[in-house]
Image (cartoon, rainbow, N blue to C red; front, side):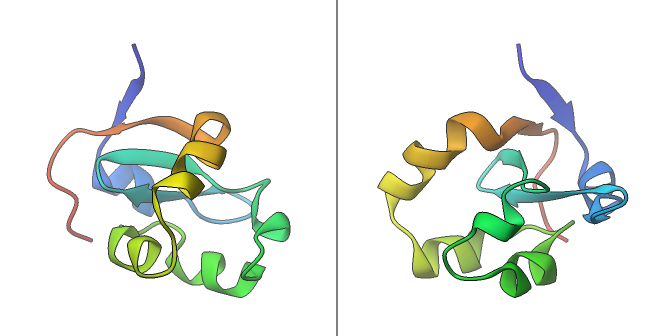
Length: 84
């Protein structure tokens, strides 16, 4: 079973020192090692680290992106509705 995170847990992971987590839908993703690989650049991921990035993610990506990278980056789910 995957780990469950609160939005506060995710919010505490907003920089490289603490690790960078984002929320997409109900999934929590550790993007710390992916930031420099992101085709759209590191800057945008650093801006949404520690937050619910669902709206921004789906604006620029489709389901295939989540399938491609989600497996290696997903570390759990959000316990409650994510509204950061």
